[in-house]
Image 1: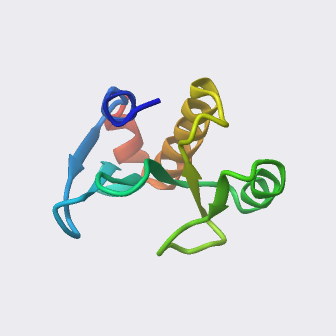
Image 2: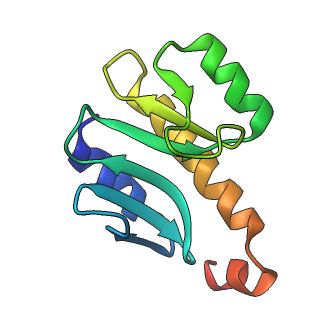
Length: 115
């Protein structure tokens, strides 16, 4: 997976916006104003994804390329190094999981707007 594929997959999800709220190199993807993924456009390709806390720990134990979320709440975020050691399909599943966690945290009205 490269940055273009990552970006295309994230923005294809319902209600997603992208922006550079921190600096000109950190691309952030949000659904209804809440962040579910972010990536650095300069350094080695990686993506920070929200994750269920128990699953986050399990993924870190199973995959050397999954680390505690860089500059994030390490209980709820993982940094996934996109170095070819994890399949694109699995990364997409984790993006879906992150997106779904954020959508579940939205109000019922916001959730309805995404249908």
